[in-house]
Image 1 (cartoon, rainbow, N blue to C red):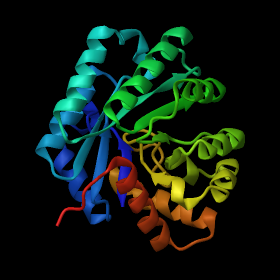
Image 2: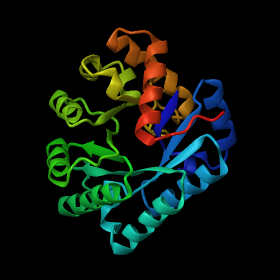
Image 3: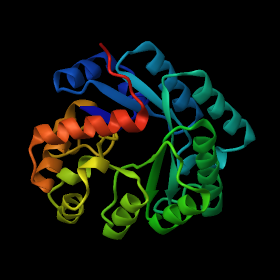
Image 4: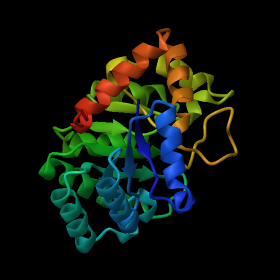
Length: 258
């Protein structure tokens, strides 16, 4: 399995990252995509990816920090993505109207800039959407879905959004919330998704799956998410593991280590 979205660049892993990665490997997680959420963590993601075989990087600025996105930031992100083959995506980017830590118009401008970057560099785009689904879809349609692909990170419990995202050709990332006891609506949405467009992710250290809620999340918990996806779809766990891994390698153009 591949964890397509985690934040091993977060300070929570500063003291025990080797142990975290060892537990991931023992759980069957062969690779992880470490996602940047500002300039500093994007640079850290790149460094980790250069140092550790099982880590790939994505670079971007989260909508919370969209107010920091300026021409200088754009130039630095483009350089990171262009100069390092370990960078396999742009993001995370998108819109978050739940916290609104950056003004909506500023978030939208930064989102458009990330989309342009994904187009220009021919890299997939990792999109965060919280309470902003209509605007996320509208901006993607206006700017054009990047040819390299899009993943809707941590699919929200919004069936119309899921349907439209799939129709646009986006992949959808399923994370820990699908395991929560009160997530029947989300599991119902997952049950109708095509397996060919599903990815698995932890969003570690956030969104820890049941039965570990309240603890720090980590990639070794990915099998819990895979199992819930298999149950929702009514297919075998092995099928989910194999197909989501194939999806991930295709989207992010990951090579298989011999």
